[in-house]
Image (tube, rainbow, N blue to C red; front, side, top):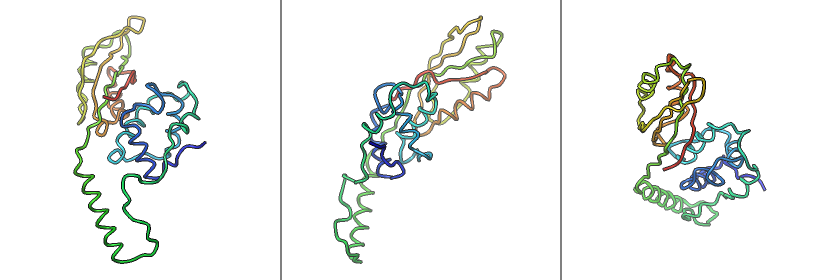
Length: 211
């Protein structure tokens, strides 16, 4: 059993729907099933068209694939998508091209797209636990946190924070944030935090959960 063809827009749309109420392909934690699906999607997806897939993809990229448990074959069992559009028969079954039929078909497509556009759009959000490590025990952690919170993005809200000891007198900043999945790229956010070179040695996504 093989994975569906994610280059097919219908299949990608079905995967987007599949992820609407799920954070991962199989269960509540990332597994090799996510790795298999991630590898099968050969190019970046349009976050505007497929927000759930984009959010999931950014999340999976934050993990080391080799460390994740499970079996890649499980992805093919769970992701049995076809390319048929079951929502509505827009085109009928006539094989011969007819100008009037083409006009009616175009009108039906236009009406269908208009109905879809009128549906209220659900804003997908995720809550993230973000770790920021300083250079050493002499790093000013108050200044580090102020600099991190100074990173502003549309769709990003910083939350509670605490210092977590990691050894040799060094503590990391662990901070919670809420992001709108369509607007905020965690990879871009990490790059912005990494640019705080005076205080920040590295950053990591400790946990991420869909709201």
